[in-house]
Length: 200
Image (tube, rainbow, N blue to C red; front, side, top):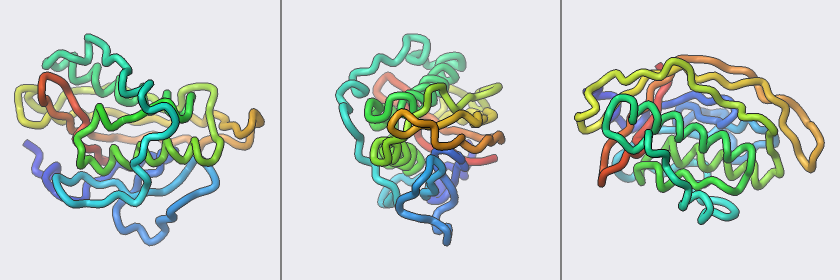
């Protein structure tokens, strides 16, 4: 098992969703465009996120969102399907701000997950939205045994330079980005949950 998932500060750089290393000196608490910067780390206990982890709007709509059957199997295909579903939800939170709560899909102390939710909340707070999904996952692959305590998946993250809108008017485009990433998920109580993410 990759011991880096036990450290308190592993990171995922997601440009539109604003995840960078903890303690970044340029870390604002709020931003004025859909490229906010917020800390992202994996922790198993007392770490505190800098972005709000509060779900927005009608969280009940998301809490009841059905995880696809394909993403509920403890197999390599099931792990990959869960990863794809998780980022489908991230996309949905930008397409329909205020409808997504990642908490039911995430380990309770996953700081990267809380920061993703905080970034989705910024879409609500600032009136932003997109009309096409900005995030794509390419070539996801399981790197460790799916029977293990935590399962590592490698993938290529791509953010498309899609326009973003405020009050129905186009106000800019998201910055294009592409890079190698890793996610850790775990099987608990008969379902997958996101445990953490990092740049590779």
